[in-house]
Length: 633
Image 1 (spheres, rainbow, N blue to C red):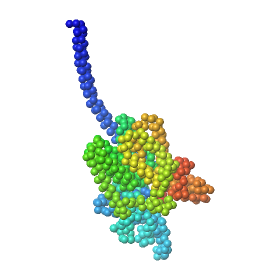
Image 2: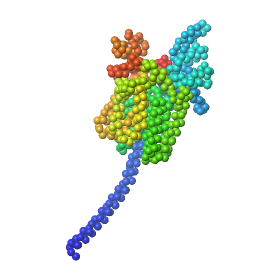
Image 3: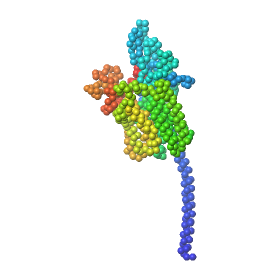
Protein backbone atom coordinates (compact mmCIF):
# COMPACT_ATOMS: atom_id res chain seq x y z
CA UNK A 1 0.00 0.00 0.00
CA UNK A 2 1.40 3.36 -0.95
CA UNK A 3 2.05 6.09 1.60
CA UNK A 4 -0.47 8.33 -0.18
CA UNK A 5 -3.23 5.78 0.32
CA UNK A 6 -2.28 5.43 3.98
CA UNK A 7 -2.42 9.21 4.49
CA UNK A 8 -5.89 9.37 2.91
CA UNK A 9 -7.17 6.66 5.26
CA UNK A 10 -5.65 8.38 8.27
CA UNK A 11 -7.19 11.73 7.25
CA UNK A 12 -10.59 10.10 6.72
CA UNK A 13 -10.40 8.42 10.09
CA UNK A 14 -9.35 11.70 11.69
CA UNK A 15 -12.32 13.55 10.13
CA UNK A 16 -14.79 10.89 11.33
CA UNK A 17 -13.31 11.13 14.80
CA UNK A 18 -13.55 14.96 14.67
CA UNK A 19 -17.19 14.85 13.47
CA UNK A 20 -18.11 12.47 16.27
CA UNK A 21 -16.41 14.76 18.78
CA UNK A 22 -18.12 17.92 17.37
CA UNK A 23 -21.47 16.15 17.32
CA UNK A 24 -21.03 15.27 20.96
CA UNK A 25 -20.06 18.84 21.80
CA UNK A 26 -23.10 20.24 19.93
CA UNK A 27 -25.41 17.88 21.76
CA UNK A 28 -23.86 18.92 25.06
CA UNK A 29 -24.28 22.61 24.13
CA UNK A 30 -27.89 22.07 23.07
CA UNK A 31 -28.58 20.19 26.28
CA UNK A 32 -26.94 23.00 28.26
CA UNK A 33 -29.11 25.60 26.48
CA UNK A 34 -32.20 23.45 27.05
CA UNK A 35 -31.30 23.18 30.73
CA UNK A 36 -30.77 26.96 31.01
CA UNK A 37 -33.97 27.91 29.16
CA UNK A 38 -36.42 26.86 31.90
CA UNK A 39 -34.24 28.70 34.41
CA UNK A 40 -34.35 31.86 32.26
CA UNK A 41 -38.12 31.59 31.75
CA UNK A 42 -38.62 30.99 35.47
CA UNK A 43 -36.43 34.03 36.30
CA UNK A 44 -38.35 36.27 33.90
CA UNK A 45 -41.66 35.02 35.29
CA UNK A 46 -40.55 35.69 38.87
CA UNK A 47 -39.35 39.17 37.82
CA UNK A 48 -42.70 39.79 36.10
CA UNK A 49 -44.61 38.75 39.23
CA UNK A 50 -42.34 40.96 41.34
CA UNK A 51 -43.08 44.03 39.21
CA UNK A 52 -46.82 43.30 39.18
CA UNK A 53 -46.75 43.44 42.96
CA UNK A 54 -44.70 46.66 42.95
CA UNK A 55 -47.04 48.30 40.42
CA UNK A 56 -50.16 47.40 42.42
CA UNK A 57 -48.73 48.76 45.64
CA UNK A 58 -47.60 51.91 43.83
CA UNK A 59 -51.10 52.38 42.41
CA UNK A 60 -52.58 52.36 45.92
CA UNK A 61 -49.88 54.74 47.14
CA UNK A 62 -50.60 57.12 44.25
CA UNK A 63 -54.32 57.19 45.08
CA UNK A 64 -53.63 57.85 48.75
CA UNK A 65 -50.89 60.42 48.08
CA UNK A 66 -52.85 62.38 45.50
CA UNK A 67 -55.94 62.38 47.72
CA UNK A 68 -53.93 63.87 50.57
CA UNK A 69 -52.41 66.50 48.30
CA UNK A 70 -55.79 67.51 46.86
CA UNK A 71 -57.22 67.89 50.37
CA UNK A 72 -54.19 69.80 51.66
CA UNK A 73 -55.41 73.31 50.82
CA UNK A 74 -58.34 72.82 53.20
CA UNK A 75 -60.95 74.65 51.18
CA UNK A 76 -63.45 73.90 48.48
CA UNK A 77 -63.70 76.21 45.50
CA UNK A 78 -67.09 77.88 45.91
CA UNK A 79 -69.07 77.87 42.67
CA UNK A 80 -72.74 77.71 41.77
CA UNK A 81 -72.26 74.81 39.35
CA UNK A 82 -71.60 72.40 42.21
CA UNK A 83 -74.59 73.43 44.37
CA UNK A 84 -77.21 71.25 42.70
CA UNK A 85 -74.77 68.31 42.59
CA UNK A 86 -74.14 68.58 46.34
CA UNK A 87 -77.80 68.89 47.34
CA UNK A 88 -78.93 66.09 44.99
CA UNK A 89 -76.16 63.82 46.34
CA UNK A 90 -77.29 64.61 49.87
CA UNK A 91 -80.90 63.83 49.01
CA UNK A 92 -80.09 60.56 47.22
CA UNK A 93 -77.99 59.51 50.22
CA UNK A 94 -81.12 59.63 52.36
CA UNK A 95 -83.43 57.63 50.13
CA UNK A 96 -84.22 54.44 52.09
CA UNK A 97 -82.80 51.38 50.28
CA UNK A 98 -86.21 49.73 50.54
CA UNK A 99 -87.80 52.49 48.45
CA UNK A 100 -85.12 52.75 45.76
CA UNK A 101 -86.94 50.37 43.41
CA UNK A 102 -90.43 51.56 44.29
CA UNK A 103 -89.68 55.29 43.91
CA UNK A 104 -90.25 56.94 40.55
CA UNK A 105 -87.53 58.78 38.69
CA UNK A 106 -89.24 62.07 39.53
CA UNK A 107 -89.15 61.35 43.26
CA UNK A 108 -85.51 60.27 43.12
CA UNK A 109 -83.96 62.93 40.89
CA UNK A 110 -86.41 65.83 40.89
CA UNK A 111 -85.70 68.87 43.08
CA UNK A 112 -88.47 70.95 44.61
CA UNK A 113 -88.55 74.25 46.53
CA UNK A 114 -89.79 72.39 49.63
CA UNK A 115 -86.71 70.15 49.79
CA UNK A 116 -84.06 72.58 48.58
CA UNK A 117 -85.16 76.23 49.00
CA UNK A 118 -81.56 77.49 48.67
CA UNK A 119 -81.51 76.48 44.99
CA UNK A 120 -84.19 79.04 44.11
CA UNK A 121 -84.75 82.78 44.04
CA UNK A 122 -87.85 84.04 45.84
CA UNK A 123 -90.51 86.78 45.86
CA UNK A 124 -91.52 88.19 49.24
CA UNK A 125 -94.52 90.31 50.26
CA UNK A 126 -93.63 91.94 53.59
CA UNK A 127 -96.94 93.86 53.56
CA UNK A 128 -100.01 92.26 51.95
CA UNK A 129 -101.25 95.71 50.96
CA UNK A 130 -98.18 96.19 48.76
CA UNK A 131 -98.86 94.49 45.43
CA UNK A 132 -95.20 94.70 44.33
CA UNK A 133 -93.02 92.11 46.13
CA UNK A 134 -89.29 92.12 46.65
CA UNK A 135 -87.91 89.67 44.10
CA UNK A 136 -84.71 87.82 43.34
CA UNK A 137 -84.15 86.98 47.01
CA UNK A 138 -81.94 84.10 48.15
CA UNK A 139 -83.04 81.82 50.95
CA UNK A 140 -80.49 79.88 52.99
CA UNK A 141 -83.07 77.54 54.57
CA UNK A 142 -86.64 77.41 55.87
CA UNK A 143 -85.71 78.49 59.41
CA UNK A 144 -84.50 81.86 58.18
CA UNK A 145 -86.75 84.65 59.56
CA UNK A 146 -88.02 87.92 58.14
CA UNK A 147 -90.11 90.78 59.48
CA UNK A 148 -93.57 90.98 58.00
CA UNK A 149 -96.82 92.84 58.60
CA UNK A 150 -99.38 90.64 60.38
CA UNK A 151 -102.72 92.27 61.23
CA UNK A 152 -101.15 95.69 61.03
CA UNK A 153 -98.20 94.75 63.26
CA UNK A 154 -94.62 93.99 62.27
CA UNK A 155 -93.71 90.50 63.48
CA UNK A 156 -90.95 88.01 62.66
CA UNK A 157 -91.93 84.86 60.82
CA UNK A 158 -89.91 81.92 59.56
CA UNK A 159 -89.53 81.44 55.83
CA UNK A 160 -91.61 78.25 56.08
CA UNK A 161 -94.46 80.11 57.78
CA UNK A 162 -94.34 82.82 55.12
CA UNK A 163 -94.36 80.14 52.42
CA UNK A 164 -97.48 78.53 53.88
CA UNK A 165 -99.13 81.96 54.20
CA UNK A 166 -98.48 82.64 50.51
CA UNK A 167 -96.21 85.60 51.31
CA UNK A 168 -93.15 83.79 49.95
CA UNK A 169 -93.25 82.31 46.46
CA UNK A 170 -90.74 80.95 43.99
CA UNK A 171 -89.47 83.62 41.61
CA UNK A 172 -87.24 81.35 39.52
CA UNK A 173 -84.58 78.69 40.04
CA UNK A 174 -80.92 79.58 40.01
CA UNK A 175 -79.13 78.74 36.76
CA UNK A 176 -78.01 75.36 38.12
CA UNK A 177 -81.64 74.18 37.98
CA UNK A 178 -83.92 74.09 34.95
CA UNK A 179 -87.67 73.70 34.55
CA UNK A 180 -88.97 70.24 33.76
CA UNK A 181 -92.25 68.81 32.53
CA UNK A 182 -92.39 66.41 35.48
CA UNK A 183 -94.82 66.88 38.38
CA UNK A 184 -94.49 65.73 41.97
CA UNK A 185 -97.22 63.21 42.83
CA UNK A 186 -96.94 63.98 46.55
CA UNK A 187 -97.67 67.73 46.32
CA UNK A 188 -100.76 69.80 45.69
CA UNK A 189 -101.25 71.03 42.10
CA UNK A 190 -100.07 74.53 43.08
CA UNK A 191 -96.79 73.22 44.50
CA UNK A 192 -96.17 70.20 42.29
CA UNK A 193 -93.52 71.78 40.04
CA UNK A 194 -90.35 69.70 39.85
CA UNK A 195 -87.00 71.01 38.63
CA UNK A 196 -84.02 69.13 37.29
CA UNK A 197 -80.33 69.69 37.89
CA UNK A 198 -78.76 71.56 34.99
CA UNK A 199 -75.69 69.35 35.36
CA UNK A 200 -77.42 65.97 35.28
CA UNK A 201 -77.58 63.13 37.76
CA UNK A 202 -74.29 61.30 37.16
CA UNK A 203 -72.23 63.23 39.70
CA UNK A 204 -74.92 62.82 42.37
CA UNK A 205 -75.29 59.09 41.66
CA UNK A 206 -71.54 58.56 41.95
CA UNK A 207 -71.21 60.67 45.10
CA UNK A 208 -74.31 59.41 46.95
CA UNK A 209 -72.60 56.33 48.54
CA UNK A 210 -69.85 58.56 49.99
CA UNK A 211 -72.45 61.05 51.23
CA UNK A 212 -74.39 58.19 52.82
CA UNK A 213 -71.35 56.94 54.73
CA UNK A 214 -70.49 60.45 55.91
CA UNK A 215 -74.01 61.44 56.93
CA UNK A 216 -74.41 58.23 58.90
CA UNK A 217 -72.16 59.97 61.41
CA UNK A 218 -73.43 63.51 60.83
CA UNK A 219 -77.10 62.95 59.91
CA UNK A 220 -79.56 65.33 58.30
CA UNK A 221 -82.06 66.41 60.97
CA UNK A 222 -84.78 67.79 58.69
CA UNK A 223 -86.22 67.36 55.21
CA UNK A 224 -84.82 70.79 54.35
CA UNK A 225 -81.50 69.67 52.90
CA UNK A 226 -80.35 73.29 52.68
CA UNK A 227 -80.37 73.31 56.48
CA UNK A 228 -77.63 70.69 56.62
CA UNK A 229 -74.35 72.02 58.04
CA UNK A 230 -72.57 73.80 55.23
CA UNK A 231 -69.25 73.04 56.87
CA UNK A 232 -69.99 69.32 56.60
CA UNK A 233 -71.37 69.78 53.09
CA UNK A 234 -68.19 71.56 52.00
CA UNK A 235 -65.98 68.85 53.47
CA UNK A 236 -67.80 65.85 52.03
CA UNK A 237 -68.06 67.50 48.61
CA UNK A 238 -64.36 68.31 48.53
CA UNK A 239 -63.56 64.81 49.81
CA UNK A 240 -65.66 63.20 47.05
CA UNK A 241 -64.14 65.30 44.27
CA UNK A 242 -60.60 64.71 45.57
CA UNK A 243 -61.18 60.96 45.87
CA UNK A 244 -62.53 60.67 42.31
CA UNK A 245 -59.52 62.63 41.00
CA UNK A 246 -57.07 60.52 43.01
CA UNK A 247 -58.63 57.26 41.74
CA UNK A 248 -58.25 58.58 38.19
CA UNK A 249 -54.53 59.11 38.85
CA UNK A 250 -54.13 55.52 40.07
CA UNK A 251 -55.93 54.16 37.02
CA UNK A 252 -53.85 56.28 34.64
CA UNK A 253 -50.66 54.87 36.19
CA UNK A 254 -51.86 51.45 35.03
CA UNK A 255 -52.75 52.89 31.61
CA UNK A 256 -49.22 54.24 31.22
CA UNK A 257 -47.73 50.88 32.19
CA UNK A 258 -49.86 49.13 29.57
CA UNK A 259 -48.93 51.58 26.81
CA UNK A 260 -45.22 51.87 27.59
CA UNK A 261 -44.73 48.11 27.99
CA UNK A 262 -45.90 47.66 24.38
CA UNK A 263 -42.54 49.13 23.27
CA UNK A 264 -40.24 48.17 26.14
CA UNK A 265 -39.56 45.13 28.35
CA UNK A 266 -37.41 47.11 30.78
CA UNK A 267 -39.63 47.01 33.87
CA UNK A 268 -37.70 49.62 35.86
CA UNK A 269 -37.70 52.11 32.98
CA UNK A 270 -41.41 51.51 32.33
CA UNK A 271 -42.15 52.09 36.00
CA UNK A 272 -40.14 55.30 36.12
CA UNK A 273 -41.79 56.89 33.09
CA UNK A 274 -45.27 55.75 34.13
CA UNK A 275 -44.78 57.29 37.55
CA UNK A 276 -43.49 60.53 35.99
CA UNK A 277 -46.50 60.81 33.69
CA UNK A 278 -48.86 60.09 36.60
CA UNK A 279 -47.36 62.97 38.60
CA UNK A 280 -47.77 65.27 35.61
CA UNK A 281 -51.34 64.04 35.10
CA UNK A 282 -52.35 64.54 38.72
CA UNK A 283 -50.51 67.75 39.58
CA UNK A 284 -49.71 69.40 36.25
CA UNK A 285 -53.22 69.51 34.78
CA UNK A 286 -56.64 70.85 35.73
CA UNK A 287 -57.20 67.75 37.89
CA UNK A 288 -55.39 69.65 40.63
CA UNK A 289 -56.90 73.11 40.17
CA UNK A 290 -60.46 72.23 39.03
CA UNK A 291 -61.53 68.58 39.28
CA UNK A 292 -60.42 67.97 42.85
CA UNK A 293 -61.62 71.28 44.29
CA UNK A 294 -65.41 71.07 44.04
CA UNK A 295 -68.14 68.61 43.15
CA UNK A 296 -68.50 69.59 39.51
CA UNK A 297 -69.13 67.08 36.73
CA UNK A 298 -65.44 66.93 35.88
CA UNK A 299 -64.11 64.77 38.74
CA UNK A 300 -66.38 61.70 38.31
CA UNK A 301 -66.44 62.13 34.53
CA UNK A 302 -62.64 62.07 34.26
CA UNK A 303 -62.46 59.13 36.67
CA UNK A 304 -64.86 57.08 34.54
CA UNK A 305 -63.07 58.07 31.32
CA UNK A 306 -59.72 56.89 32.68
CA UNK A 307 -61.29 53.60 33.86
CA UNK A 308 -62.93 53.18 30.45
CA UNK A 309 -59.61 53.85 28.71
CA UNK A 310 -57.81 51.24 30.83
CA UNK A 311 -60.50 48.59 30.25
CA UNK A 312 -60.52 49.38 26.53
CA UNK A 313 -56.74 48.85 26.27
CA UNK A 314 -56.99 45.55 28.15
CA UNK A 315 -59.97 44.56 26.00
CA UNK A 316 -57.94 45.01 22.81
CA UNK A 317 -55.29 42.56 24.03
CA UNK A 318 -55.46 39.48 21.81
CA UNK A 319 -54.06 37.30 24.61
CA UNK A 320 -56.93 37.90 27.04
CA UNK A 321 -59.20 34.93 27.71
CA UNK A 322 -62.90 34.84 26.88
CA UNK A 323 -63.80 35.38 30.53
CA UNK A 324 -61.49 38.37 30.98
CA UNK A 325 -62.61 39.79 27.62
CA UNK A 326 -66.22 39.77 28.77
CA UNK A 327 -65.28 41.38 32.09
CA UNK A 328 -63.28 44.13 30.39
CA UNK A 329 -66.01 44.70 27.80
CA UNK A 330 -68.69 45.12 30.48
CA UNK A 331 -66.41 47.32 32.62
CA UNK A 332 -65.46 49.51 29.66
CA UNK A 333 -69.10 50.00 28.64
CA UNK A 334 -70.16 50.71 32.22
CA UNK A 335 -67.39 53.27 32.81
CA UNK A 336 -67.86 55.14 29.53
CA UNK A 337 -71.66 55.10 29.94
CA UNK A 338 -71.36 56.52 33.45
CA UNK A 339 -69.04 59.20 32.08
CA UNK A 340 -71.81 60.10 29.63
CA UNK A 341 -74.39 60.27 32.43
CA UNK A 342 -72.00 62.55 34.34
CA UNK A 343 -71.30 64.77 31.33
CA UNK A 344 -73.35 64.13 28.16
CA UNK A 345 -70.62 65.32 25.78
CA UNK A 346 -68.62 62.24 26.81
CA UNK A 347 -71.06 60.12 24.77
CA UNK A 348 -68.55 60.38 21.92
CA UNK A 349 -66.19 58.00 23.72
CA UNK A 350 -68.48 54.96 24.07
CA UNK A 351 -69.78 55.49 20.54
CA UNK A 352 -66.23 55.64 19.15
CA UNK A 353 -65.25 52.47 21.00
CA UNK A 354 -68.41 50.77 19.71
CA UNK A 355 -67.42 51.70 16.15
CA UNK A 356 -63.95 50.24 16.72
CA UNK A 357 -65.42 46.99 18.01
CA UNK A 358 -67.74 46.74 15.01
CA UNK A 359 -64.71 47.08 12.73
CA UNK A 360 -62.94 44.39 14.78
CA UNK A 361 -65.83 42.03 14.05
CA UNK A 362 -65.57 42.73 10.32
CA UNK A 363 -61.77 42.35 10.40
CA UNK A 364 -61.23 39.99 13.36
CA UNK A 365 -57.50 39.41 12.75
CA UNK A 366 -55.73 37.00 15.10
CA UNK A 367 -58.48 37.11 17.72
CA UNK A 368 -61.16 35.56 15.56
CA UNK A 369 -64.74 36.54 14.76
CA UNK A 370 -66.38 34.59 17.60
CA UNK A 371 -64.27 36.19 20.31
CA UNK A 372 -64.72 39.68 18.82
CA UNK A 373 -68.47 39.17 18.61
CA UNK A 374 -68.67 38.06 22.26
CA UNK A 375 -66.81 41.24 23.27
CA UNK A 376 -69.08 43.38 21.13
CA UNK A 377 -72.22 41.74 22.53
CA UNK A 378 -71.14 42.18 26.17
CA UNK A 379 -70.13 45.80 25.52
CA UNK A 380 -73.29 46.61 23.57
CA UNK A 381 -75.76 45.13 26.06
CA UNK A 382 -74.17 46.94 29.01
CA UNK A 383 -74.03 50.25 27.15
CA UNK A 384 -77.60 49.83 25.89
CA UNK A 385 -78.99 49.31 29.41
CA UNK A 386 -77.28 52.39 30.87
CA UNK A 387 -77.91 54.42 27.72
CA UNK A 388 -81.62 53.58 27.82
CA UNK A 389 -81.81 54.67 31.46
CA UNK A 390 -80.13 57.99 30.59
CA UNK A 391 -82.46 58.62 27.64
CA UNK A 392 -85.48 57.70 29.76
CA UNK A 393 -84.44 60.27 32.37
CA UNK A 394 -84.27 62.96 29.67
CA UNK A 395 -87.66 61.94 28.29
CA UNK A 396 -89.19 61.98 31.78
CA UNK A 397 -87.94 65.44 32.70
CA UNK A 398 -87.60 67.27 29.37
CA UNK A 399 -89.97 65.51 26.98
CA UNK A 400 -87.23 64.28 24.64
CA UNK A 401 -84.48 61.67 25.10
CA UNK A 402 -81.97 63.94 23.37
CA UNK A 403 -82.52 67.06 25.48
CA UNK A 404 -80.52 67.54 28.68
CA UNK A 405 -80.50 70.18 31.38
CA UNK A 406 -77.34 71.67 29.93
CA UNK A 407 -78.82 72.11 26.45
CA UNK A 408 -81.79 73.98 27.98
CA UNK A 409 -79.54 76.13 30.18
CA UNK A 410 -77.24 76.89 27.24
CA UNK A 411 -80.13 78.21 25.16
CA UNK A 412 -81.17 80.43 28.07
CA UNK A 413 -77.70 81.77 28.88
CA UNK A 414 -76.27 82.17 25.37
CA UNK A 415 -78.01 85.50 24.49
CA UNK A 416 -76.76 87.20 27.66
CA UNK A 417 -73.15 86.07 27.19
CA UNK A 418 -72.88 86.54 23.43
CA UNK A 419 -75.18 89.48 22.78
CA UNK A 420 -76.78 87.46 19.99
CA UNK A 421 -80.50 86.69 19.82
CA UNK A 422 -79.95 82.94 19.69
CA UNK A 423 -77.43 80.25 18.95
CA UNK A 424 -75.39 77.96 21.19
CA UNK A 425 -72.61 77.18 18.69
CA UNK A 426 -71.82 80.69 17.52
CA UNK A 427 -68.13 81.21 18.30
CA UNK A 428 -65.73 81.31 15.31
CA UNK A 429 -63.47 78.25 15.51
CA UNK A 430 -60.20 80.20 15.57
CA UNK A 431 -61.45 82.53 18.34
CA UNK A 432 -62.36 79.68 20.66
CA UNK A 433 -59.49 77.36 19.74
CA UNK A 434 -56.77 79.99 20.07
CA UNK A 435 -58.15 81.06 23.45
CA UNK A 436 -58.36 77.53 24.82
CA UNK A 437 -54.85 76.68 23.63
CA UNK A 438 -52.78 79.86 23.96
CA UNK A 439 -54.61 82.53 26.00
CA UNK A 440 -52.62 83.68 29.08
CA UNK A 441 -55.70 83.12 31.23
CA UNK A 442 -57.23 79.99 29.64
CA UNK A 443 -54.62 78.45 27.36
CA UNK A 444 -53.98 74.73 27.68
CA UNK A 445 -50.34 75.12 26.60
CA UNK A 446 -49.90 78.06 29.00
CA UNK A 447 -51.27 76.34 32.10
CA UNK A 448 -49.90 72.87 31.23
CA UNK A 449 -47.14 73.50 28.65
CA UNK A 450 -45.89 69.89 28.74
CA UNK A 451 -49.12 68.83 26.99
CA UNK A 452 -47.58 70.00 23.70
CA UNK A 453 -45.86 66.60 23.83
CA UNK A 454 -49.22 64.91 23.24
CA UNK A 455 -48.83 66.18 19.66
CA UNK A 456 -45.06 65.66 19.46
CA UNK A 457 -45.44 62.04 20.59
CA UNK A 458 -47.48 61.20 17.48
CA UNK A 459 -44.22 61.35 15.50
CA UNK A 460 -42.62 58.79 17.82
CA UNK A 461 -45.51 56.44 18.57
CA UNK A 462 -45.81 53.01 17.07
CA UNK A 463 -48.48 52.75 14.38
CA UNK A 464 -50.29 49.99 16.25
CA UNK A 465 -50.49 52.12 19.41
CA UNK A 466 -51.92 55.07 17.50
CA UNK A 467 -54.48 52.73 15.96
CA UNK A 468 -55.27 51.42 19.44
CA UNK A 469 -55.92 54.93 20.80
CA UNK A 470 -57.71 56.14 17.66
CA UNK A 471 -61.28 56.09 19.13
CA UNK A 472 -60.23 58.22 22.10
CA UNK A 473 -58.11 60.54 19.98
CA UNK A 474 -60.94 61.09 17.49
CA UNK A 475 -63.40 61.84 20.32
CA UNK A 476 -60.92 64.26 21.87
CA UNK A 477 -60.49 66.12 18.57
CA UNK A 478 -64.26 66.46 18.10
CA UNK A 479 -64.75 67.65 21.69
CA UNK A 480 -61.99 70.24 21.24
CA UNK A 481 -63.79 71.53 18.17
CA UNK A 482 -67.10 71.61 20.06
CA UNK A 483 -65.60 73.48 23.03
CA UNK A 484 -64.01 76.00 20.67
CA UNK A 485 -67.28 76.82 18.90
CA UNK A 486 -69.46 76.82 22.04
CA UNK A 487 -70.85 80.21 23.06
CA UNK A 488 -69.18 79.90 26.50
CA UNK A 489 -65.84 78.83 25.05
CA UNK A 490 -63.75 80.39 27.85
CA UNK A 491 -65.60 78.30 30.46
CA UNK A 492 -67.15 81.08 32.54
CA UNK A 493 -65.65 81.76 35.94
CA UNK A 494 -62.89 79.20 36.27
CA UNK A 495 -59.15 78.67 36.35
CA UNK A 496 -57.43 77.61 33.16
CA UNK A 497 -58.93 75.61 30.27
CA UNK A 498 -61.88 74.14 32.16
CA UNK A 499 -63.77 73.14 28.94
CA UNK A 500 -60.84 70.85 28.04
CA UNK A 501 -60.29 69.24 31.43
CA UNK A 502 -62.12 66.04 30.45
CA UNK A 503 -59.59 65.47 27.66
CA UNK A 504 -56.67 64.99 30.06
CA UNK A 505 -56.72 61.14 30.15
CA UNK A 506 -56.44 60.92 26.36
CA UNK A 507 -53.79 63.65 26.06
CA UNK A 508 -51.58 61.99 28.69
CA UNK A 509 -52.13 58.57 27.11
CA UNK A 510 -50.88 60.02 23.82
CA UNK A 511 -47.66 61.09 25.55
CA UNK A 512 -47.35 57.64 27.11
CA UNK A 513 -47.66 56.05 23.66
CA UNK A 514 -44.52 57.77 22.39
CA UNK A 515 -42.36 58.35 25.44
CA UNK A 516 -40.34 55.12 25.04
CA UNK A 517 -38.98 56.32 21.71
CA UNK A 518 -38.79 59.97 22.74
CA UNK A 519 -36.45 59.09 25.62
CA UNK A 520 -33.73 58.29 23.06
CA UNK A 521 -33.54 62.04 22.43
CA UNK A 522 -32.39 63.36 25.79
CA UNK A 523 -33.24 67.06 25.17
CA UNK A 524 -36.89 66.12 24.58
CA UNK A 525 -37.10 64.30 27.91
CA UNK A 526 -35.42 67.24 29.65
CA UNK A 527 -37.88 69.66 28.05
CA UNK A 528 -40.79 67.43 29.09
CA UNK A 529 -39.61 67.47 32.71
CA UNK A 530 -38.98 71.24 32.74
CA UNK A 531 -42.36 72.14 31.22
CA UNK A 532 -43.96 69.62 33.58
CA UNK A 533 -42.46 71.38 36.61
CA UNK A 534 -43.74 74.71 35.29
CA UNK A 535 -47.22 73.19 34.85
CA UNK A 536 -47.23 71.90 38.43
CA UNK A 537 -46.34 75.40 39.71
CA UNK A 538 -49.18 76.96 37.70
CA UNK A 539 -51.71 74.35 38.85
CA UNK A 540 -50.67 74.77 42.48
CA UNK A 541 -51.35 78.50 42.11
CA UNK A 542 -54.84 77.64 40.94
CA UNK A 543 -55.33 75.04 43.66
CA UNK A 544 -54.36 77.36 46.52
CA UNK A 545 -55.22 80.85 45.23
CA UNK A 546 -58.09 80.63 42.74
CA UNK A 547 -61.39 82.08 43.87
CA UNK A 548 -64.33 83.08 41.63
CA UNK A 549 -64.48 86.53 43.21
CA UNK A 550 -60.97 87.54 42.15
CA UNK A 551 -59.80 88.16 38.58
CA UNK A 552 -62.85 86.59 36.86
CA UNK A 553 -65.22 88.98 38.65
CA UNK A 554 -63.42 91.81 40.33
CA UNK A 555 -63.58 95.51 41.08
CA UNK A 556 -61.33 97.77 39.04
CA UNK A 557 -60.77 101.47 38.50
CA UNK A 558 -61.29 102.49 34.90
CA UNK A 559 -58.99 105.00 33.26
CA UNK A 560 -59.53 106.83 29.99
CA UNK A 561 -60.55 103.79 27.97
CA UNK A 562 -62.25 100.42 28.46
CA UNK A 563 -58.91 98.63 28.29
CA UNK A 564 -57.31 101.00 30.77
CA UNK A 565 -58.17 99.15 33.96
CA UNK A 566 -56.41 98.84 37.28
CA UNK A 567 -57.61 95.82 39.23
CA UNK A 568 -58.20 96.74 42.86
CA UNK A 569 -55.98 94.78 45.25
CA UNK A 570 -57.35 96.17 48.51
CA UNK A 571 -59.04 93.38 50.46
CA UNK A 572 -61.27 95.74 52.42
CA UNK A 573 -62.67 97.15 49.17
CA UNK A 574 -63.03 93.76 47.47
CA UNK A 575 -64.88 92.31 50.47
CA UNK A 576 -67.25 95.28 50.64
CA UNK A 577 -66.02 96.42 54.05
CA UNK A 578 -64.76 99.70 52.60
CA UNK A 579 -66.32 102.07 50.09
CA UNK A 580 -65.34 101.74 46.44
CA UNK A 581 -62.94 104.36 45.02
CA UNK A 582 -64.25 106.80 42.42
CA UNK A 583 -64.51 105.30 38.95
CA UNK A 584 -64.89 101.71 40.22
CA UNK A 585 -66.46 99.21 37.81
CA UNK A 586 -67.09 95.48 38.02
CA UNK A 587 -65.05 93.72 35.36
CA UNK A 588 -66.85 90.44 34.72
CA UNK A 589 -65.11 88.12 32.29
CA UNK A 590 -68.55 86.84 31.21
CA UNK A 591 -69.57 90.30 29.96
CA UNK A 592 -68.67 90.90 26.27
CA UNK A 593 -67.05 94.32 26.95
CA UNK A 594 -64.43 92.68 29.18
CA UNK A 595 -63.78 89.52 27.18
CA UNK A 596 -60.53 91.06 25.93
CA UNK A 597 -59.06 90.36 29.37
CA UNK A 598 -58.60 86.73 28.32
CA UNK A 599 -55.67 87.98 26.22
CA UNK A 600 -54.26 90.49 28.72
CA UNK A 601 -50.66 89.30 29.05
CA UNK A 602 -49.91 91.94 31.71
CA UNK A 603 -52.58 90.57 34.04
CA UNK A 604 -53.04 86.97 32.95
CA UNK A 605 -54.88 84.98 35.59
CA UNK A 606 -52.05 82.71 36.89
CA UNK A 607 -49.54 85.61 36.88
CA UNK A 608 -51.99 87.93 38.65
CA UNK A 609 -52.80 85.33 41.33
CA UNK A 610 -49.08 84.66 41.88
CA UNK A 611 -48.33 88.38 42.08
CA UNK A 612 -51.20 88.85 44.57
CA UNK A 613 -50.96 85.44 46.24
CA UNK A 614 -51.60 86.72 49.76
CA UNK A 615 -54.66 88.69 48.65
CA UNK A 616 -55.98 85.72 46.66
CA UNK A 617 -55.63 83.35 49.63
CA UNK A 618 -57.39 85.87 51.86
CA UNK A 619 -60.26 86.29 49.40
CA UNK A 620 -60.58 82.52 49.01
CA UNK A 621 -60.87 82.02 52.76
CA UNK A 622 -63.34 84.91 53.01
CA UNK A 623 -65.56 83.52 50.23
CA UNK A 624 -65.58 80.06 51.79
CA UNK A 625 -66.49 81.53 55.20
CA UNK A 626 -69.34 83.50 53.64
CA UNK A 627 -70.62 80.36 51.95
CA UNK A 628 -70.40 78.32 55.15
CA UNK A 629 -72.23 81.07 57.08
CA UNK A 630 -74.97 81.08 54.47
CA UNK A 631 -74.47 84.69 53.40
CA UNK A 632 -73.22 83.70 49.95
CA UNK A 633 -75.39 81.37 47.83
